[in-house]
Length: 327
Image 1 (cartoon, rainbow, N blue to C red):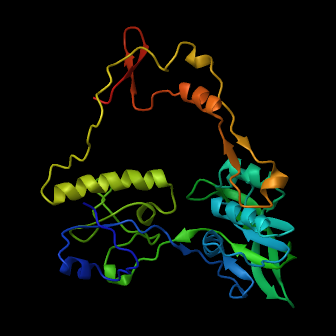
Image 2 (image 1 turned 90 degrees about the vertical axis):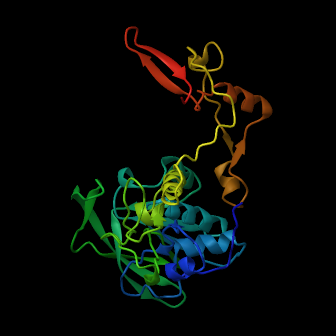
Image 3 (image 1 turned 60 degrees about the vertical axis):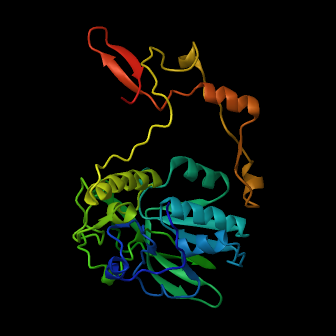
């Protein structure tokens, strides 16, 4: 019974209530890129990572030059660097203000980028961007790590007098995303500019309005957004007079079983490694990097399933692990 309307920009929640909606759930993510806030950032050779990846994903193929700089250490920065190679860049250098230990990008993604030839310059941050003839110079300063900040990562501190320059045809900025919440929503925000909600119900400061996902958590994962969507669905159901029970059981409930896996010797089975295209081959195109499993490999890996639909019970006298249903 769900209806999907696309191509509509919502600037005011009052308009939605006026149309007869009784409850609103906001999960608009963090779609606005964080800016560097330095001199020269408006140069046409500087592009934010989200816009860059969006253009490529929509099928655009454009000349970005041969020497590319990418500022950032997250998954967007890694994706942008790898895509730049596939657009024909000869040299791609990631500029990151901390060390590899603090990089928020997935470890396997970092390894894949390095295998493809992406270079990483650690402990540097840009100071200003200087236009040249057909390119730009980026003035950088070296950093050292101090005490941990609010994220738990050690805070980067500039080393005065260590400035130097690097030349790039294109500079891709991927240092994070933030919210883009219309003022017409009239919602209370946190100090980080996120929507403030009740942590139990995800209710906002306006009655009948709920929010979740990145717009509440900050940049996070799809899994966390889905989880908050379920919490909001329960809360909205209660708000509209329901019980808040949204689960639907489509299969028979499993009975508790002593087995962890599906076959005897489960614990001795080894993971089937997924095959990948060789780095030199994959960086020349946009083909799928992971080649997947053969039928035989897929069956072997499926047998290793731990039964994620079940949960563990500990029997106190024997300390026995028992896998039981979600009752």
